[in-house]
Image 1 (cartoon, one colour):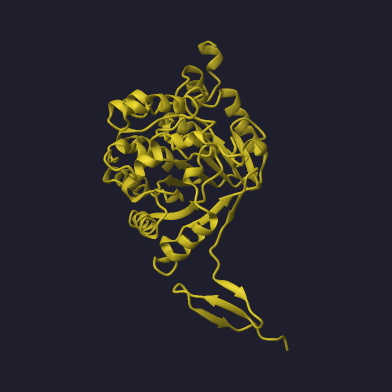
Image 2 (cartoon, helix red, strand yellow; image 1 turned 180 degrees about the horizontal axis):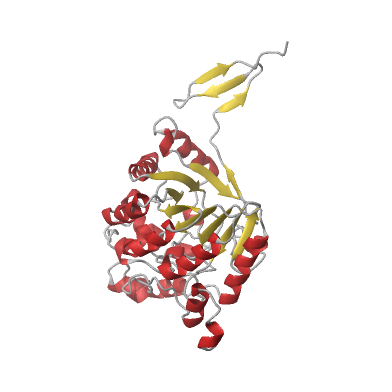
Length: 376
């Protein structure tokens, strides 16, 4: 395609046609292979064969900022557990799925998921600054996948959004949208500005934690320029991820008037204690980030070693109530396999009684609550 043929395309389309990779590149020194992990002292040489096998199945990637948080002498290090390949991933249970939340069955077009009537997911990019070992899209992203959505697919996605006036919110996900350059994000913002019925733009990202230097003033300025209300949801699972650099990156967004939410996954061996969850949620609130979702782990292939039972998760979240400010309470949710959406998992504090209700307080004591008055 020559210059004349590209002259009518948007910036995003031109960039996609001219480059197959994301423009906002993570640190080139990121660890992306078994040899990288061994050289960094994060894996033993005798693990080379297993690591290579895992890397051939699921993407491996660890940014330098997160790698620096790992204690190689701690076999239970919660940062290492999230990002370093583990032989346990080779165990795949019958109930585990390649697409555990059913993106494909709710996708009318490439790169677009329309699961709920009033919002869509737009997946413009299929690479991340880090690859979480529990990721529900682990078989759809990473090396070997198309880095970005094609120009034609981008145009079709925006045409679909424009044609469906029930769409109130567009959620940029992926991959990680903050790996798109500010110029590409500006093109997305400009296209959405022309669609009057879209009122909210939400961006899901790990970049402020994984590669905080990529949250530049230019990126922030693009988001500030949006006609829609913009929200940024940052993914972090352990309080150690909220380093001074990560908090500074979040502050650049928040100080620009962009509200931030948190997303976390409840993970065995990472944050499956009341103490760690409480510290994580308080750290979010102290950073002006509102706790949003605490996800029950999805049934992604090779991730059973991360999953607690729902009963264990409900018991943990129940202990947060009353011991943490209401500002610090996340919503514990489960994505129903097959594309049926999220449901809250509780916990429950109310049950029916013969007369009225029985209500449990945060200390476990039970109280009676009267029924409504009879109509006169």
